Image 1 (tube, rainbow, N blue to C red):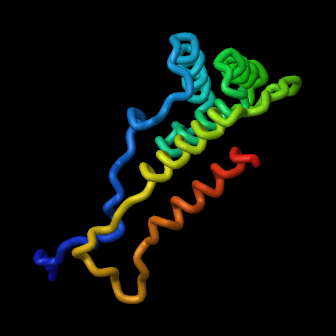
Image 2: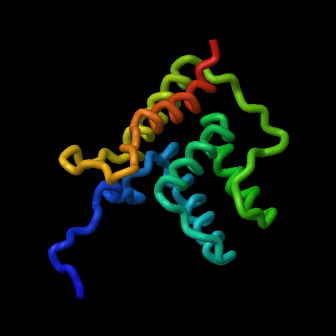
Length: 155
């Protein structure tokens, strides 16, 4: 017998869906967009999985970090990965990243804090947690991301 009065447990399903439009792009020029599209076509041709929004954001942040904030170096990293038939994006071997100034560190920290606030969900306060389960603590995500961002804050 099917219980049609039963509502599905949505307590853990309150996370909003992220889309590619929610991603913060490190560079906005047409040259970077063309190189990035070329990278995505290359990944499709190799039958590699598509990026999920959170993974895409981390990849773009890592690319900007490895490029030292330079768009030209980021494009070289993408080109190098395609030329060498690599599955991922890796820093250039002979590239020395410039030291980050305070403004750049603050920008990285702001981006990670924004990423932290965008990539967690808030359970519905009206719905009690299931027996034996604890509420998901949003502070844990924020603390983890802030700890990750603190590597840029060198005193």
